[in-house]
Image 1 (cartoon, rainbow, N blue to C red):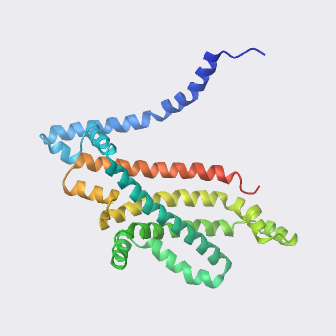
Image 2: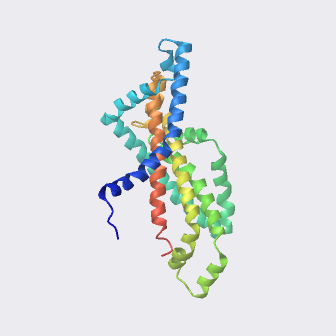
Length: 271
């Protein structure tokens, strides 16, 4: 067998990441170009600093972002918001899963809890934020709101998944007298895998958006919502764009990390 040249091997190692990069670049480049042209058009129409008050240039936002990232307060703010949303997400997922099991197993639980869950799903987020603010401290509101928004998503997805489990497999497990834990591990978890992945990835984005929205209205300190509100209040639009970009980037990163972790973990289910 012919030996592979180290240079060739190195080139092959770089080819795949480079191909992915070239594939991913056109869309962001296009929208950055649209943003730059739109800001230029606004600048010509308004003149003066009016451009910075309506639609700043990408370079202005990047400079504001770089100045923020270099401070300790920035990372404290990010971690505080992440902690609140993560706590709400965890509670919402556990509560939604528990309600899904109860409503599928017990008809009286379905009649009791299903209408309340549907009301939570249909009600405006802002109404819940204001109500929860009356009942709890403002620092607790983002976590509570994130949990409330997550529960209906997890409940609905897992309920449909539980109802779709193959009844013949359950009858077979009963015939062989499988213990409850083994039935869950070998039948329920493999069947629920796509529903769990879909519910958690959707719930993560929803928890993040609703949690930050609650921060904007309740202004806990430190928080991303607090920073977004006051940059808008003081008309520091480049910094407002920078904080918004951080919020969006964190949401996308959380969903990506969670999806990777769940995909790797799901390979062990049913084994």
